[in-house]
Length: 111
Image (cartoon, rainbow, N blue to C red; front, side, top):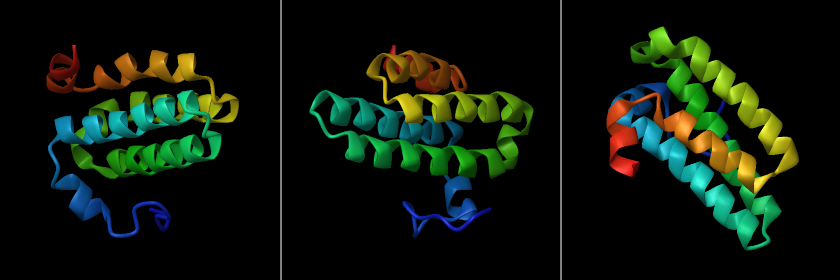
């Protein structure tokens, strides 16, 4: 795992203590923050939110509980990278339901 820049105090071991649902919701929160920053005209802040989401996704990829979904998580990260470059609010919104589908409980909480 590379050194974290946004979540300096967070380690893979600390991240793994969170339930899968909470991990998904925390990534979702960062994407929601990015949407709000873009709506309010702060693209640099939106970039930071997405960068934090990348770190959380990478930590999730390291969590052994996600091994069966690793391919999908890494693909989600790849698509998010494309969105990061475009900073398109609608594309970020479209990704959120996909992220929530990684965990049924998270999906049910937000739908």
